[in-house]
Length: 470
Image (cartoon, rainbow, N blue to C red):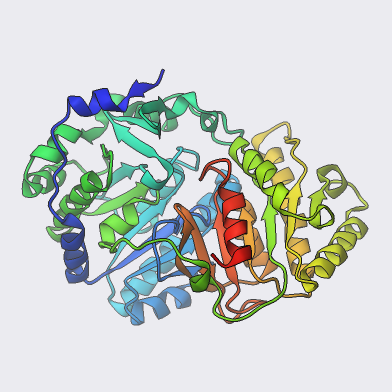
């Protein structure tokens, strides 16, 4: 049942209004280390700007970033679309290469395992693999899934989705029924116990209440963090950035005193932790640095209910002939190559005539008999969209990719991205990347639109904004 935010606030002390964000920036800089964000899909940079995004994780790639003293970078694994076995191999490889690069360059680092604010993902697998293979045996795991841009907050140890005054426990939303990552508990202590199959008991999990976060001196909070035993899990409640910035300051102080920490967070944590100054939304003038009269390309692969609603509303701004529905049953058939080639020709023709195109997969969700079968079907659908993007010969004015798996695969396999940069956000929680020079279309504006962000009109709003240069 939803709870009333107003009622909860009436029983809480006021937030601490000290400017901890600036203090975080100063302390993070003083610690002189690189924050490495290992991201399980490409949407986690939805709260930051002017930060590199890597899709490769060799030791040489890390050495280069460490030598240059890059303060923060993201490694995009797309592991949320993979099996647990494949995820384990990737995270072991990443951790080992980070450790080797750190030893070669003598560069220190902090590690963030970024995942979904609605609790879908390989947990506790990913932070456990990082802790094990980075030799962080004495580390605690700090779990902070809040994402304020998407109205995800944690209070009384329960993770909620906020809608006006209503706080709905996340286990009462469709996200908890995700076909790959189902769960039963919104109480984060119970969630950790559930996901560790009881290896961690509810009573084993430490938490910091909003009362303590708002009232205690930040040094006291840091001392309390120092006392948490090795290998333990700890959660922090937060309703807004004032809470989270103070939490981040306490964590940074604990780190400066030698406390090893592995972070499992959503995307609001990173700007708070590194002290990134808030910046407004990008305008279309920020997006288009050069004149391009070609049409834009929007591709919708996400199946979540919100994506389908956004797609339905966005279709009204397109010409009927430039709406391309990809029939999933045809993609899964033996005749898929000729089918996709025909679609590529249609897309190229429209883009070259300055007509915006929207491509979407048919909305009927097809699943397999097991999680691995379902992942395999999803990969085939994603590969079909990759084929469309890698097959077009006309550079679009922009690409919008809707859905985490979709946007990762289109960037890496369709455009050949190895390193790009997030420039900022076009709408809250929706990042825009500038493709690197090594991609098929260098400096192409590429918008990553998560499946679970925005309201019913957000996709339509972005497309209209890019069309009219507002």
